[in-house]
Image (cartoon, rainbow, N blue to C red):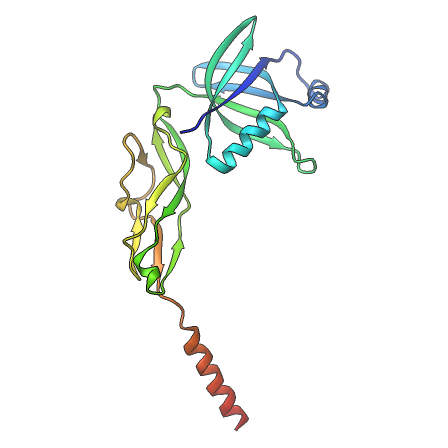
Length: 207
């Protein structure tokens, strides 16, 4: 699991006017909360938020270290994005909700699924269909991975792989029904046969 860092500062001012001033300075108002802390109003750099958002799109980064500057002290916290408000016109972050993670408590997240290897059925002309692209899992934060790779090399035409068939990494458990379909190899469509029928129908009509 790759991690990133972000700096944050305690924010005293609140309200629309204060938020507008922050955004002009390329900063983003934010809030940090969690099960064991009182909500804290924060300020973060817009560039840092955008950088982590780009990383999250490419690598599914969920957790990162926050360096919280408060009263002359630097406090390290493990956090994740809970909600990000985006300006629909300028496409920049307007406000961020951070959630503090306790390393000794399980978290529940949606994990992307990546299909790896080529099914034997595809070499016979079958078509691989990726049915479920994310799976909800639970684990301790230090067990979290970026993506769940599922080997589909053994799938023949008509075969499918379900949640119950996946060997999950140690410490990760699925929160999905066991019979949830992840991928299936379907038979190829008989386009040639369909075209032949259409040609025969056209010939008969012309005759």
